[in-house]
Length: 446
Image (cartoon, rainbow, N blue to C red):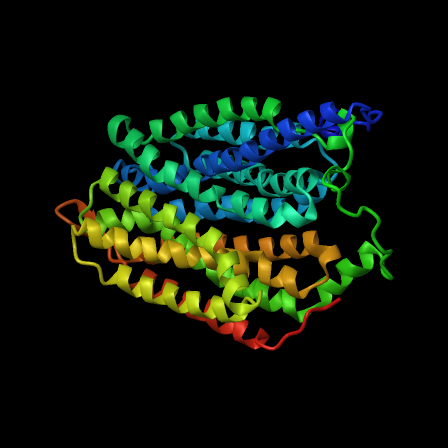
């Protein structure tokens, strides 16, 4: 482990290059490499995380696992992911991102490969818990890399581009993995994504970059001509972090994020099964509906910042409430969908994903970062992340129990009723809407 931490460690600063044209050329080349790597690299992380969502029905049909067991396995990933986000966030601040992030995706790939060659529940559970921990080595390193290579004045734009990357991964998973599983079986639904993730992990090792200073380049703020001298804070970073931990704002937004992520991963984890079991869709049809809808989530993520800045003076409360009401409406629409109506299902899921994409930006971090001390933004994101994925994890096993509890068997064929699960999901969406109302008049804390 000591050797591994040493290998992960960021490099030593090199003497500053003297040729201005060489600095500009090298800096721009590496910035572009970083941007495309974090966008598509983090998108591929989702392929290694959501494979089980697509493979649920064939695994259940084959008698490999039931809905309760699948819910437990999914929960283990989210629990280890939740706590890994905070730990790996601290490590990422001190790491060579190319080595650190590629390690996470590489181990996730191996977990998927082993998953495809196994049929024992306990082994599934252990592998997916390991996968969750190493999946958490994607988000924080990507954000650290963006902050290292893009300056304060441009960072919001590039952060927004990166934030939409998960929709790319979700779309590829729901469409691509569904096709693979349909053609070659559930095992291939883990083996093929595992191979893809392993290849991309190797690519990231060469296309991601360490800090600019390790290549003899200046700090990004100096490179962009922005003032590098900042006034000294009256408090230390530790003091700011303690203030954040004691703030009721982060707790309230965290609780809202808990219920929002219950809804997010309820649809992402169980949506393909719902379309197949309750609405009569084939696997590829269900995957297509989910895949197309996630592209609207990408649009929602990009739209969210512009919408709140342009029309609400960068306040997040009004647009968050509007989008939360749209989210609840879309859930009711999904629940009431007629059978075998692909265009209407695509429209309902797309509306859901668009509203969700905006709320993941607002409630998933931006609102809290706006209100709390910016010097503790990393801690804010870490705390919100734990709340978020504890909700996602708890959702998976509760939903699994509710769906399994509704199972009826006729002539040896199992059918599932989703009434109880949807009651749980819609209730969570309502709570996620109500909690932020207590923050309506909160002022920015310095």
